[in-house]
Image 1 (cartoon, one colour):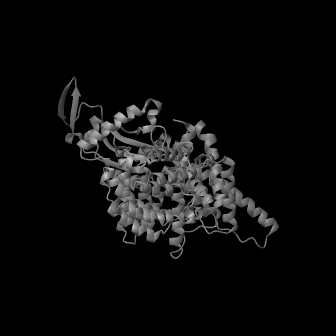
Image 2 (cartoon, rainbow over the protein chains, first blue to last red):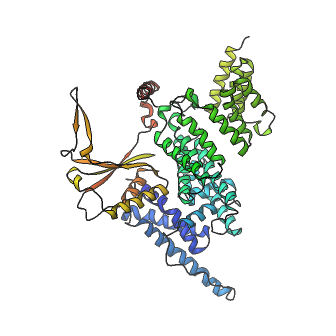
Image 3 (tube, rainbow over the protein chains, first blue to last red):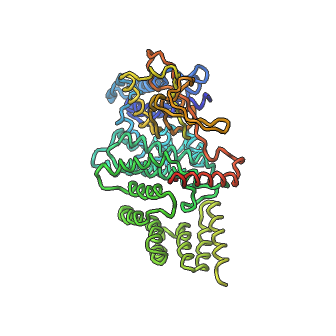
Length: 415
Length: 146
């Protein structure tokens, strides 16, 4: 057993609730996080030498709490000296003590970390740090940026929260839907950072996606009545179940039709389908994550690509384009159209997207359109489209794959 | 990473494995914590080996042996599948598993990481992978699933 990793593991298990309960104590999430970090550093210094204490959560809580109370006392002294009159006493630290954070405290922490005053990137970093219990360098490695960048991002975010006087609370019923979707967006952004990218160290990226799934499951435990939370968990699990199948031996991407479905992780598929079922039984209108999960479930249920229920998928995409009328949704819908109505109708559907400026630099539009053109026997146009797409592809592997397809299309084009 | 956690006990103690009501409740709470922490993927308890059957391969012959497996040193009483960040994390979760100090039984949790395709590294050549995949596909076809 690696001692440092043990400390990190214990930290990851308890840090979110620790920070949440400390925030209750000091009324400042940034300060709470700082003193929690100090407790973590003490653990890193002591545990490898003395062993992990029997009650590690209590140990961390005691150290952090002592530090927090010191800070509060010092602040009070200053208050006494310089602002005697203004010094309205702070709440006494309640004796329930840290480590006893309620689910609501933890949930409040999630909502603060994903607060709209913060940028998307800051929300992701802060959520991983405060809710996921990741260290700064783990977050930096996951996002492929220097440690210092993440460190600055986190301290700036804490400052922003303090300046905006963001309350430590779960939003009320009116604000909840919008705030919840902001939270889910952050989790899905973290997931996609790990899932979509084929650049960088693949292992770290995959860990990041797993971390996001885990955050999603924690949220599902905190908000069991919210269907979209279960929908997002289902979506992430069904997508993550394909991890082993979606890259080839040399790291090149393997697309859905070519994936060896025996390599899909059946445990994750089963778990994802259960989460989807839960989302559907909560008796509220389906949201975008649940619909996307339902689409992923159609793929998961097909033993072979040829057995895919495209009619069901197309119907779900019709629903999704209503919920999320983005050009990317329409592009994905066009693929379902291909399988239901054939390449001519599908080509019309993508051609309608070509004028959209949001799609101008999106390589998959060209890749998909080229596929439809090939099926219609229009090889030269397809090759041209693929070459253009290759120029826009974000990763080397995707670029190479598109170039290969372009060359193949050129070869079969009549001269 | 995914790990399987095997709940093991001495075979000699199998008759006494029935947990107390208290322990069952503590187990329920523990399971709920695992779910809420987002690490629990699967799990279940296994019926006593009196209801088990073993298919044994030895020296080219195949025989079927009915339980209970009294001669075994240890038996498996249940399992979990967890998704964790490291083996160390699984250990810390396992240490928190409730136990009845008065049961007089020695039990253990064995943590076994799953193989991932990437673990085979360079040894796992495309040829070998292709062969394994073909085999897996055949097995799947025979069992009517994939």
